[in-house]
Image (cartoon, rainbow, N blue to C red):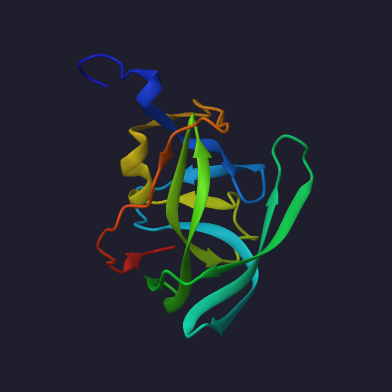
Length: 169
């Protein structure tokens, strides 16, 4: 890095620990500037209608980095939007929901596409929509911040943004 080192308080590594608020579990999260929308490991994804609105029922499954135990919880959320992912394997539609994630000392409400990521190393992928609220990424470092949110932590509410199609997953 030319011009000196970045301040660590607003710089994140390319892999960080994040607490998924609904589970209370801490998972490894990959910060991926190649993805627009974040993605989280979800299984048993089932769409349904509630009061005329599109909803989705799914099971979040993560290995808790603190206990090394698998943590799973069935959740129901309104579908925020549908995402078209285009990659080498073709085109795929995924539901997107709003979930809260603790990064550092801030809770972020963000868009997450639901996808079975069980064959991936990282169960949580954070895309540019989330990264823009965090700060800089130092691609040479990992685990620069532990999730330290509590009841008094600030909440970065979801920010309405364009819903361009993502490239890659």
